[in-house]
Image 1 (tube, helix red, strand yellow):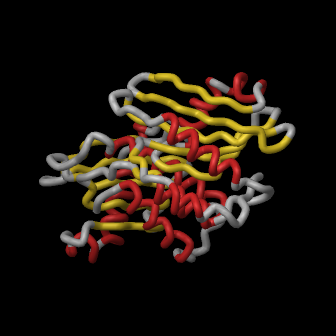
Image 2 (cartoon, helix red, strand yellow; image 1 turned 90 degrees about the horizontal axis):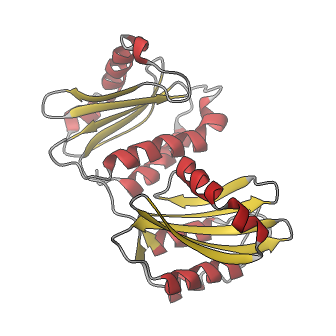
Length: 272
């Protein structure tokens, strides 16, 4: 695992802000094991799939870069040796029609690499990376509810202009859980879980996803939603489970306080 030294704050002072579709910082060892330290706009699954495509090149060279197109995405990767048997990987993605400034992104990668020293990724660098790399927020989300299979509400956030919905979030969670009880026949398996899309609630639409017995319910204004909203909905599933499933969902005993910090992740992806 990596850490950074005390000079990382000059990153914020000396670099411009970049708007991209996504950015990650990760480390891969000689056995091919990948650990993701920072992500913004790129899900864990997609990050692993992309890096796996170029894993051999990354592991056999001391450092280098990769530029490629995958579907409608441009992928730009810088990698550096940080220990004899591991590499630091910085990956940027954007739509192919958006031109990346590869030179500036390389210098950003190099500056981050130069501030890496030993054991953990400090909060300071995460904050700075959030500030340097911006992603377009999705529009159209009215409310988000994260619920266990029995209907217990872990987390919710509702548009401030919908006070009736906000005041009845526990009842809404129970309603959503009831929908899933009657839809069990549609569940394909634990890995992918249930997906119900476009449930018309009159004036808004309900999208449901389940994974690992956690229900993610999105209430969407279909007339105002932006094209990136469904991708971000999937990112929320991945980030919530990666952050909380092992530590707080398994063996949950009623303490909701750890989930409060997830509001910052929601605000990163959605205008709500």
